[in-house]
Amino acid sequence: MKKKQLFTMVNGLTGTIDIPGDKSISHRAIMFGSIANGNTTITNFLEGEDCLSTIDCFRKMGVEIKRNEDTVEIFGTGLSGLKEPVEILNVGNSGTTTRLLLGILAGTPFHSCLIGDESIAKRPMNRVTNPLRQMGASIDGREQGNFTPLSIRGGKTKAIAYKSPVASAQVKSAILLAGLQSEGTTSVTEPHKSRDHTERMLRAFGGEVVEAGLTVSVTGKQELHAVNIIVPGDISSAAFFLVAGAIIPNSRITLKKVGLNPTRTGIIDVLRNMGANVSISNETIENFEPVGDLTISTSALTGIEISGDIIPRLIDEIPIIALLATQANGKTVIKDAGELKVKETNRIDTVVSELSKLGASIESTDDGMIIYGQSGKLTGKTVNSYGDHRIGMMLAIAACLTEGPMALENSEAIAVSYPSFFEHLESLIG
Ligand code: S3P
Image 1 (tube, rainbow, N blue to C red):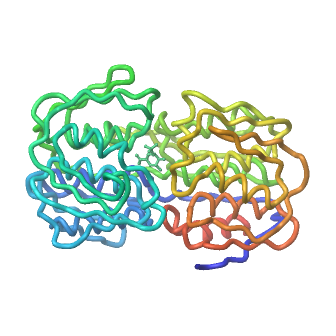
Image 2: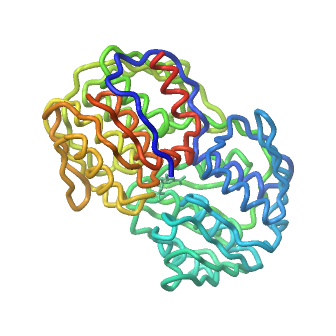
């Protein structure tokens, strides 16, 4: 466990950053590259620990994956080429690896065991194991297969029409990946639209997917073909510097080649609704994913309500939005975000406890939190990421505003999604 001394009372962040690759897209590029026929090259792959766990799992199933200086090369085996792993598949801290991999394994005619870290062991898996069992996979594990360690024996799966109780791209993707291996058409209907990177990447690999309102369908037994993927910058990583630029006096930051998929841009809507100056330039589309540069500068902000359909579009940004709200005029209310309780930590609890330590006026609710903005200066303290990368980065940005020394326990967690985070922060401090 590392304890890191943080910068405090920073006088403005200025400069330009190339945001590292998107975590969700990097995972999917490894998975689709492995199950496609032919060689896939990935550029701007996120070398975070979560995505490295995905690489490790596919290597253990016999896929050759080469990490070069600037690219990752995958020698795809096709779906039927995956091999029964001799070793246990270790998913580390990664929920995306666990859930999407289960979807792939549901249709593979062999046995595998999955294990992860302490945080993964607390995250509910029955949201995917239940529908995958309906499709025919045989899954067991702790508490009837709700928690890791899990074991799965896949095989011949059948198509289902699944109505998901949660808006979750991990659930949707797991079922679609199992559906790709089943006879007939599999569909998933969600209560709100979740991120659609699986659908877009499936098209990039030559697959067919149909979207109608909140329902997505795939027909089984499609062949996927290798393609070169350029991974856009992760808007969830950019979010820390977007908020920093909005709240730290005298800041102006440009973030290059950030993914602007509309299922992920809730943070931009929130910033704009609160009064921030965000501009977008150089918009293009790469592998069906929109990309652009973002520039933000300091401005006065007003509290708002954040609820409903926008929640899945910014679910991972809520920790940093909570910090943003501490600096706005008035109250910010976050509702309909009960999913925060089953992320890398219970993010309602960890956000409220750590921001309260700094003196913020914030309270938890059943499905979110209420933040009373500008109710006093933040004061430096020793805080803890509790092993959650996004809590760690939010606290490091908070430190830029605090008076008095600030230290972050479990700072190493940040490497899960943004290994160069502190280097980038230092470059903006100048
Ligand atoms: C992800 C989906 C989201 C998100 C997670 C990554 C993905 O989870 O919170 O960080 O890559 O599909 P849910 O789909 O469970 O909401």
